[in-house]
Length: 194
Image 1 (cartoon, helix red, strand yellow):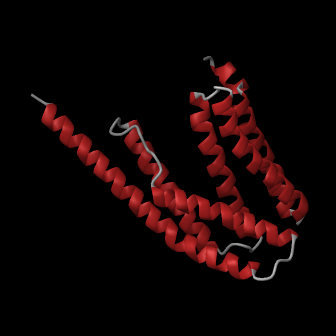
Image 2 (cartoon, helix red, strand yellow):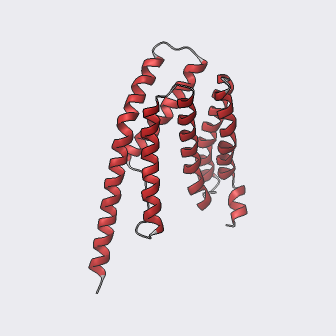
Image 3 (spheres, helix red, strand yellow):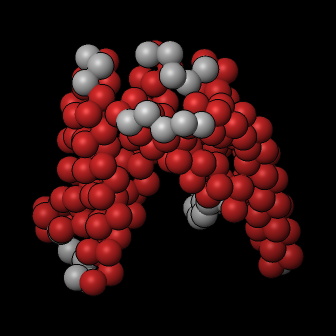
């Protein structure tokens, strides 16, 4: 499938909707237009849910989509963490831990990919939990700006503390899994050498 046809595939168009909505979402948050920001967040979230469904149902899974979807997800979450930190709704130390984890993983994966040491980087189970909790905390914070729900601030506080523990733990697990893969691959290459 050509690059142009991959770009035009329905799942990839939905992913691009998510990317297109992001700057407007940031602007609405910075301007304290929480209802519009909340609406844009739901549009982005819905596009994320439907792009996977569309890829499976329409048989339009593409190589571009395999890279574009996780990039869009990570860009959305990371940007929201930064903006929500800027407006004082997420403590700086939590965002620093989240970004340090993501940057460390990105650098290690890039280095291993470029040097042809390793090409497959599936997420770890702690990494999946980390992402899920980040999504829940962003949704909870944004919900709290639109609707007053008793106990929501306490829930956000607990979720943020959980992320502060989970982010470094998931980074350590990912590093351990990757190191083991590299060692196993090195052992297999050494064993097959004449």
